Structures are given as C-alpha cells and as structure tokens.
Length: 369
Image 1 (cartoon, helix red, strand yellow):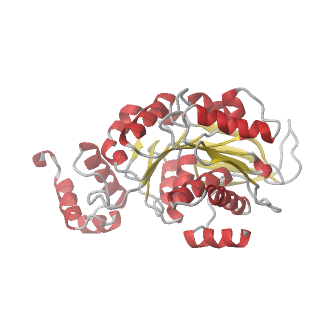
Image 2 (image 1 turned 60 degrees about the vertical axis):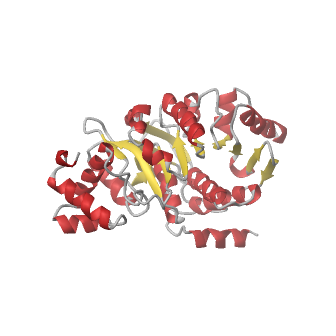
Image 3 (image 1 turned 180 degrees about the vertical axis):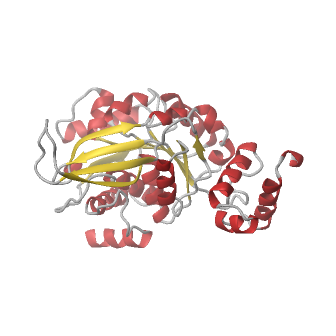
C-alpha cells in the first residue's frame, strides 16, 4: 500500500509514527506546506485507512464525536420595536454556529477531546467556521463538497434579543449518509461518546442507533427544531440520551404539554420507546429529567434577568448535560449544569460563552448552590 502514497503522504505517516500528537502546524513547518494542505492530506490518509486520525493511533484518547451541523450564523439585531412589512434599522453580526459544532466547542472548552464530523462547501463560509473551531475540536473528519454551499443560519432578533424569525440553509447535511459514516467506522467505534443532531438524515440517525447499540457506545441525540423531529426513528433503542425541549416533544408525540403531569408523562413516553435517559427543557420553567431506574425529577431553571442573545443557549445546555454525565454527576447536578451554562450563554453576546472552562463551570455551580 505504501507505493500508492505520495511523497508528502509518506512523510506525514513517518512524522506521525514518531509523534502521534504532532500538530498540523508542526507538520506544515516540517514539510513547507500550508496547514489547510496538511489537513487535506491527513483527511485523505484517514479515508484510505492508513491512519485513524491525530491521537487516535495510540488509542489512548477517546474523543467525543459530534455529528451534524456546522453553519455560519448571521444575526440581524433590530434596534427598535419590530415593524413587519417595512424596513427595520438593524446591525449584523456573524459567527460560527450549528448545533453539533456549538456543542463540540462547548465540550472542547470544557477540556474534552472532541472531533467534528460534518459536511461543508469549499467556500469562504467554511473558512470562517474552520478558523473559529480549530482550537477546540479535531476537524479531520470534516468532508468537503465543492459543488455545495456550507450551511447557514440567519436569525432576526428583536430589541430584547428574542428570536423573531430564522432562515436555515441546511441542504448540505443530506450528504452525511450512512455510507459516509462507514468510512469513519474505526474512529466511531473507538469514541467515548457520539453526539448527533437532527440536521442528519433520518436513515443516518437510524444507522447511528444500530451502530451505537452494536458497539456498546453512548449515543446522544439533540434535535434541532420541531420540524426536524420527523427524522427521529420510531424505535429509539440504542439512544443513551435525548436532550429535547417541550415544543419538539409535543411535535413528536402530537400531544400538548399543559402542566407538570403532562411534562412528566412526556418523559415516560420517551423512555417507553427505547431512550435510556431523557431531559425535556421548558424555557423559564426549568427541565424534567429521568430514566427508568432512578425515576423522574424536576429541576428549576436558573433565573436570568438580563438576556443579551438567545442563540446557542440550548446547545450550551446540551453540552453541559453531556459533560456532567460523562463526569459521573447525579441527575440533579446534570440538569443544574445544563441550566447554569445556558443562563451564562444567554448573558453573553457569543454563541459559545468565551469564559467557559471546567473550572469556571464548577464555580458557576457553586455560586448557584
């Protein structure tokens, strides 16, 4: 197989054999190439099966693999009261976003090794996402499709930071097929946990349910929106965690949650179709968390008096839940971690709060107590 490799590919393999943790920048300097060129060469070696990825070779670092959306988020902030049917004075901000990507950055800031598995175009939008993400996650499992556009999410926010309307161009994620995931079977099978959002097609989510069950891997599913609940399979055996909200749950079961009894019943409904652990958020009212062994618990939300921007708060909640569960925390502490991280993100102008770390999250929880 060695004679099928280019000279640069052979050199990369040699350097990685000597130091499995060598950075892409170090490889670029050694070979006199750009870092994006090195990233493409490594991606090619992964797809050919020669390497499993940076730090996977020794099989010592089990990453969390986040599968799904990585978008450019554009936010139009209306300065005064919203007026429909006419022009509204506003200003625009632009950041990297996407549910899977946002969760990956949160987890990376919390100190976990993370890989992002997504699809993107070969365009300026992907360059923006790559630059914002590379410090916090491994991007070697990103797949470029030059004929397609990188995903984008455009939100219009009122003077209080609340969402008025959002527009999403997510067609590229149809390329995250079971066949694509099979190319990364070795990496997926060695993961600490798989997190998938519902930007992925339904057959991909079904594949992940079977794959996780067969390989005894934790699988976390995070819905993106109520319309995408149709991408959930009917049988959710193999799903370790479902982190969802009231609207998404009402859409899936076609049943309104009017009170706490309905809310608790909704948790039981999810558990009855195979989900091992579920948490349903309900905005300012808090969350309901449970499984069949420990029961179902209500946890109040963290009161947030000053909201700067709602974008990313749900992803912050999901990431803190995943992190706390992997750390072995109790159900109550898991829900509290989600709530405090969401609250701090609501108070930040950024999609992912810039001060997040494992130490800071612990301090936030201690202050809450």
